[in-house]
Image (tube, rainbow, N blue to C red; front, side, top):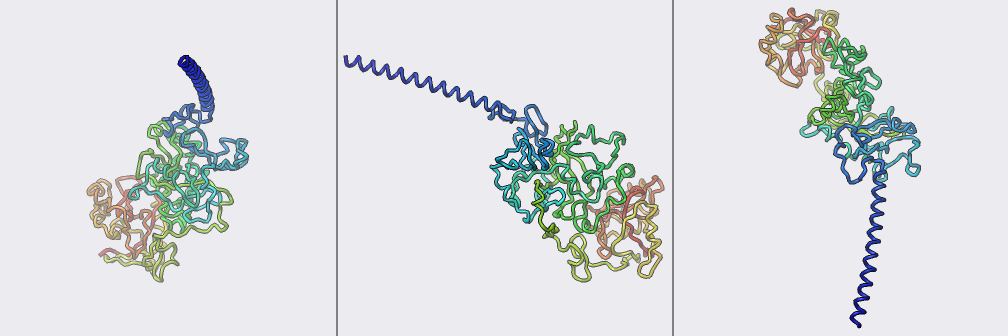
Length: 506
């Protein structure tokens, strides 16, 4: 009897335990259903939060994505914002509006500015820190000098550039990002066509080469304006470049700052092509996953595949406010690699050329072959037909018989490259076929360097006119590039240096 009672009690306990377990399972299922419903309604548009979006990062806004790797003005997302740039979230689920300014209707009143509470480093920004420049006009805060140069000084590919900026911690802030092409255009100087508001249409709102910014048979109203100063190297492009007479004229500060068309406050190899985070949305651009870049050596805007290394460098940016501008917008600290910035930095008898104190040229330089050359700074002259005039009117060192040198005389001025003298182009053989092609390798010179005698100066960023034209080719003349010691077959409409000579060779 006792055994029977024991089994009855055990059975009752078992039934009660089973009922409780069923209730627990039902409750768990209900909670799971609620979670699933919450995930489906999440503004990411991805449904299950554990599902990975494999298309995110391909540069295209695919189904289920709000954006993909790009950025845009905050006001275009919500008119309630008064400024700032919004970047695409890493999972492509929406826009990161932490840099947006103003009282947007969607702004969280408990979190002014939509500041990311998980990113406290942004609140510690130090506007007086070294390594940055704050643009007093746009309030964009730039990494200065440029940081990531890639392996061996070669620029990183686009993906590495994005990663570098996202991981950068500078001046107490960690919300750095890759700039848009519109932002890169704000720091162009001296090239009106690619500065903000210039004729070149490439922008965040016009990124498709197949439509709004392709020069179809020169029928578009902007011609070759995106080529910047490079358009001057081609007679046809120059005529449709929309450049003015004030363009492509480097200021003294720019000449002393690696000779490029950028805000003078920038330093640290600022001339290289610089990646933007604006994709080229043309058919070919999408296939190559290409992004726009800006080359400040000529104010040129182009695009490259995101996988291409060595083409472009990276300069990170973040959006600031008027409060971030230092009270005194002091000039950027001198690059520690520079010996000088202006002539006053050098001892007596020397001047500053390419940030190095070199011997200051005398008025004239007499070469070993007997030719006497104009020394010091010279000017550029546009058009070969105008090149002889400055020499014909020159009064220097008590002499007035100065003239434009012929190609033989100009070749003889090259110092440190014997190949130039082996180039068959001469006054006796000025034709391209008989001169240049006779020894093409020699005519190409000796590679990048400075082959102008120090006693003359060091202006080598442009070619030098000779008085020798090519009688076998219309509108073609000969010049010398002292950066490479090359003999160049050039258009007679180019804009080049004139350095006068007198006397005759021994």
